[in-house]
Length: 282
Ligand SMILES: C[S@@+](CC[C@H](N)C(=O)[O-])C[C@H]1O[C@@H](n2cnc3c(N)ncnc32)[C@H](O)[C@@H]1O
Image (tube, rainbow, N blue to C red; front, side):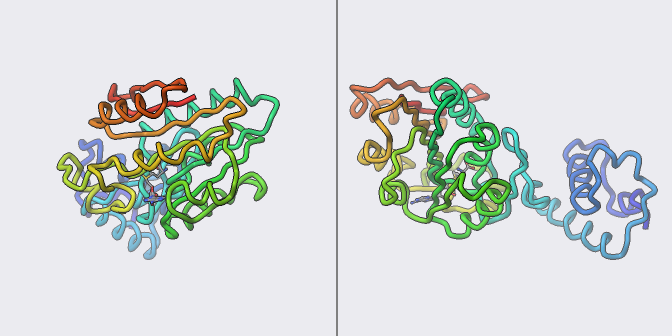
């Protein structure tokens, strides 16, 4: 069957941008085309196996599964990240945390090896993007989900083994146990309250709930952080800690920061969508 016939059979609506994008990306995943080349491949003859796979993936798209899970790829900051249902799909707003870390590293660690800790690392997107840019760095990644760590391992395989370590455990405990004092710490923890109703159906249905929700109305990890953070950072050198939080948590984060960070420089920043999103401590 030709691709053009397949598209006709499936009743694909080429006026619908989402359908065009999905069709292109699924085709490029199954057929190893560049998505942009599809336009020149309409007379490509699909094998039986390709028709079966294409149908299966198209069905998933129609069921609402995010394209990143269907194609097992999410482009994040500067890298293709392998993702599947074991991990959260890295979000655009998280890219700014990576940018902060890279800029800080270039300014303060141009002649030394910076140690970056990526806590609650999920797919590893943050650490992988950082290492891609700052090649002499060391990244300590940790997560409580063993399934997520398997995904992270796959993503880190592109680097030398000496440049990273992947660790299992609860929040800051693996880092405390390692006795490593990091220069840069990035934390994107679960921060959605279990009562929050502003979450998309697709997120609830497909993404791991362990990556999304936490106790104390989404504040659990920040409360923990302020009890433990001085144990894991190298306070003798320039340091930077960046935490991501929910768009409606600014006031609570600010209250914690005012209470616990009297002797430190900190600021709260907005994301690309103009939502308050990060606490940066230095
Ligand atoms: C919001 S996701 C962030 C994933 C990744 N850093 C990113 O930005 O795409 C939160 C991650 O925290 C992990 N997590 C949940 N509870 C944890 C805990 N108690 N300790 C460590 N990691 C935890 C989840 O498994 C998930 O991978």
